[in-house]
Length: 415
Image (cartoon, rainbow, N blue to C red; front, side, top):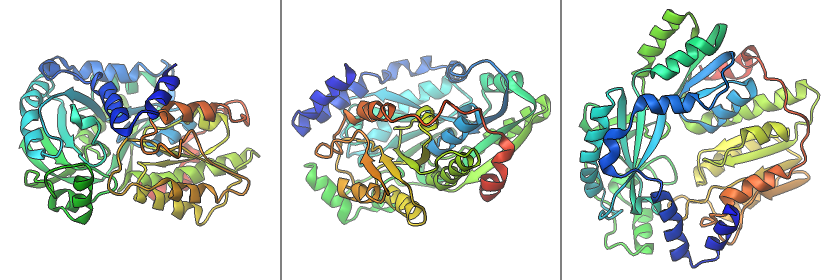
């Protein structure tokens, strides 16, 4: 039913399709007056409740990363994120006025932080890639600076004897304006435009604003005064002290996986999957390329696919996949594309993606993508999953791999 509804939205004029899609997102946002009700302990408990209560050889804690999710899935291991998104409903702010957005967020931010001393808040505003959604809501991304009790208990109670906790540490940073000891405002984000373009403008910014009917040729954000972990992907290092203390108290090993960019893990994890398949005498020629939140770890394993995760749908992600394919061949290439609903700076068009899937030796396809609708292909969110589930499975789900199998091929190259 949801797929049919979204397909109907696809057929509407772009302006109305975007409004309906954005309204669906805003409906899930929290009213600003309720930010004081957010309880970080309950959030952490909600995360761990997704995992069966059994023993695990390894638990990953830290940065959000699609490739890391695939590594954890292959090991049968939980991933406990440091960062969560809290969308906050708001009205009356021009999406191209970052100064007004920052000021609008001060009061709700104060409520949230007063109730949760273990969180740091990154108020992120991106009128390039998030243009649809920020018309009616703010993006509050929170990071734990202390190890949540639920994460501590889970590691204590569900790690095997001699188990390992891995801190997943993406070192990506971004210029921010500090508003308080635990509160920063980040204008822009990783994607198609550079930090310099967000803050100083340029021809691509002027073109975007002109195309969307804005009455200015550049944004006027608050002056950044420091670099901080990037809101969505970066790791808050203050958490490390608690992780180290917990490791000593509960006698588990702590290892660090450090990398500079979210997509840096993608080719390494893809190659690790390919090596594992080869060791088991299974075909290695099926590549599944994922985009942002279009992520299918279960079906990747079920279909015997090699996962390559891209952070978004931009020229940079296209380049990362192209570089990977320049030195490897696959019989089948399936590629999912996240549609964010706007012709943003740095967006790679359908033709560029089609050129990469055409490198398949036998079958290359854009999975669930309506080429005419992208990047407003909102039904693709559902269609991609449905089409992947129709791919012939290669095997029953494999038994989990061992952490020791990862160390020679990935760990030492990253850590």
